[in-house]
Length: 315
Image (tube, rainbow, N blue to C red):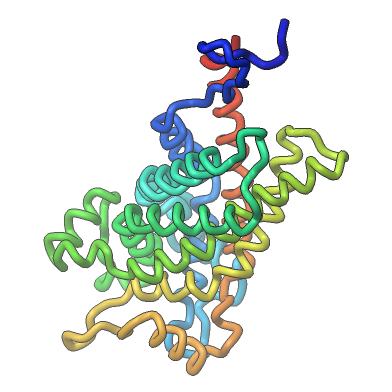
């Protein structure tokens, strides 16, 4: 039997291997992100609390990530560490579905007929495009997530008290106007550009490097190692932008004026009042959240793709 299938016209041109439909790529991207979120939501909560800790002052509410976690457990209970889970799931259903779907489609389209993958620079550009688009779609859920995870640190009379993500979205739209759902959209998109350029490109590059080394095969262990490398690169690159996003999306109006004018104002105030290295405040929970989330997302995605190919595309 010939190794390459001939074209219908008999010209002997090899056909590209069948791939899953675009709708399935988007669905798997969202499901992979949602599955990972179930495991890392407590870390996301700690990360957000750490980034808001000591806002506008040198004194911090939490000394370390462990201190933040124990304080939340003590004051809010075991259920408290899963505050905002519904918003986290909706965020993945919108943001991750869009970004991973677009990235996968563009990656395959730009892969050579002989299977040569895109260059590193092209991977980064694909990642930035996918990330910015996904961030815009997912900003409303992101706003709800930041507010819900931040609520427990406020005095009872100042808490927003959202019941779930849909209650949050409806109340924000009704009480503050629909445009508020996209508050912080620019820094959210900027963060996504940095995250996806680093995360998606570095994951693909790391996986390719590990496979080319001859010491790894295309299995879960390889995906795990590539994801951990990707998570570390992404954490270091994106933290300053992430703290801008968090502060803007959680800010309140004071005497009719917002706490921050824009992202640059956030950076200036953080450096002035909290110190330069506060831009990386919460590095440990950020990576502790991003690392496992990256690992689990890509592992779930790879396994779903393999299962789909085995069930529907083989033979």
